[in-house]
Image 1: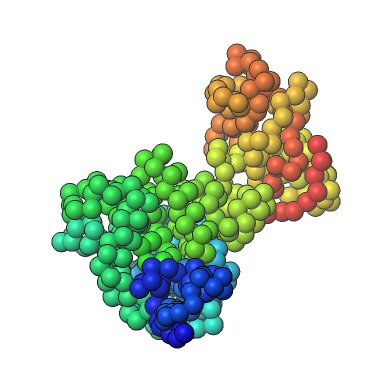
Image 2: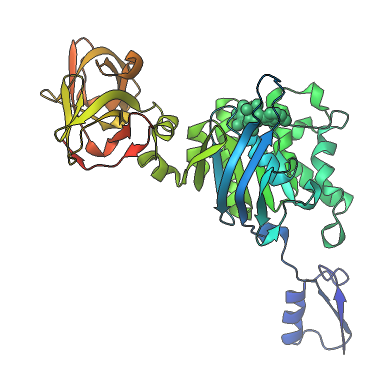
Length: 419
Ligand SMILES: Nc1ncnc2c1ncn2[C@@H]1O[C@H](COP(=O)(O)OP(=O)(O)OP(=O)(O)O)[C@@H](O)[C@H]1O
Ligand SMILES: [Mg+2]
């Protein structure tokens, strides 16, 4: 008997795989002849290549085109962060805060003015984009207008080398799989200008997913999808990310979207990172008023107030007792779920409306100390049967849902408080 070891995937000649062949051999079903054992070069496939990303003092300045203003635009300022491998990071912040610039620096389309970028221990700061192994969905989709959807999605697969090179059939199969993921398999023969914005966006997502990259960067990938498709697609992105463990950065200015799928979120403003942490931790424990206001729907209610003689005061009401001897002016943030309606509660508000939301109701009221006279919004159980016709509603506050901030800097003041 001769046993030949060959390179390949399956035992194509016999039609059996190696396990079946061994089984037949051991059980004595094969006594004579040549046995071909195909083995495959074992390398770690892309799919399990986890990649840690380290940003060190990353700064990007653009020259200001307005000649009257001398200072540069600082799009990203001193961004230092280590993204653990295999995680999905939500990058959040208002328009113009530097989210896209941060992604462009990581994928190599922009070079930093200062600072370094590492993928694991490799310094990629000077590496051109095509050598970084990054899959990116651009905010503007960046599809090739002269290519069909099929060719657009296939594009990243066509230049694979060596071990990773695919046959035409394998490419077609992967394209179809990626197209199905984002529900555009019917559109494969169209060109980008024959599709809606949301459809083009889905083609861009499919193109980034088709070759599982070392790092996946998604710049507002869902902004043009309707509500249902948006939730479906974000869950699909999360599923694929969890399965492949590819380190992913997901840019959005929709805080709910970021909170629902991210392992960690990064909150930015004016190029500066304000806070990094697990979504729930950042929501519960924001470092400043900006972060507190940015997270949460309905948003946190903000009042002007003061800490005086161990009491937290807003207008004429003493909201909580405070363990602090220092008297100071403050901003008071109250999360909508922190209001407990109570007949003799210390916080007196004027009733405006009750909005039914099913299980909960949203009570809209006014308070004299509310910043810019913005109505307060509380979320309370529908079972309480709040009377919308009442003139006044009084609340007791859950101290854990009341956050206090410095009046000048907006920084969080951490003091013990009780009702
Ligand atoms: N090439 C450039 N030249 C000059 N300024 C630029 C350039 N690119 C970006 N900027 C400026 O840098 C800042 C950050 O821009 P960036 O596109 O990163 O914001 P963003 O957070 O992605 O905003 P959006 O949510 O609107 O997409 C902005 O003030 C922008 O005007
Ligand atoms: Mg952007």
